[in-house]
Length: 116
Image (tube, rainbow, N blue to C red; front, side, top):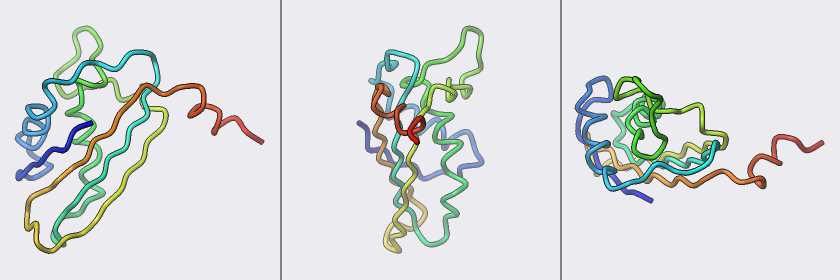
């Protein structure tokens, strides 16, 4: 679990660097599947749907990287259960706060996709 803050535009690599630096203590999650929840708190001027992709790109410490992959090519194909959430808070200005919750995806999260 991580609560991170970024001040940069999501279109700049500084955005990803700020996230990466704050989750550096993380270890790659074991197994093949990952359940990931991202909860954003943004100001009214942020287009929050533009934030999820660069945020996931910065999660290499949690998702891992393939051998020889570039830094922002996290193994996002491991994500089998994804939740995206957002709260607009006019008091945060251009700051983005992100709650990151990730865990190995177990059989229970996979069963949801195979029920009648």
